[in-house]
Image (cartoon, rainbow, N blue to C red; front, side):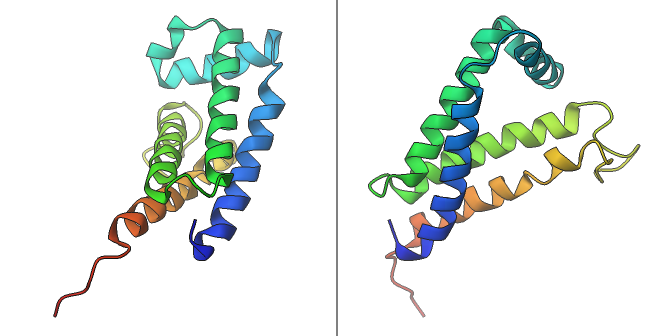
Amino acid sequence: MKLAHLPLRVSIGAYFLNSGLGKRNLEGAAAEGMHGMAVAAMPQLGQFEPARFAKLLAYSEIALGAALLAPFVPAPLVGLGLTGFGAGLAQLYLKTPGMREPGSIRPTQQGAGLAKDVWLIGAGLTLVLEGLTHGRRRHR
């Protein structure tokens, strides 16, 4: 892990790890609410029962958080994971009714929490691009 990546990877990794650990035991109405919102944006997730979906989401967040924190996991690889996760949240934001002002991508007050997650895409792409371009010699 490059020293310059340390603040980004540790802060986001710790956040994801904590979030995933907090979701491990979701059941009942909490799991159903999370699942219902996800299915509304991505109908293919309807194939999972709410409790199973919550577990899969929790373990995905734990895995991504651990990968970000592990210094031996290459930047482009964790960047792809982070970009993918961020893209899923962006899709949730764009497809969930009430998250955006009518005819706009600007968030409503209800959608501000999801809209802010666009930074995950930026951070992920930064890790991917920097990792892919690192070490290349510049030609004039």
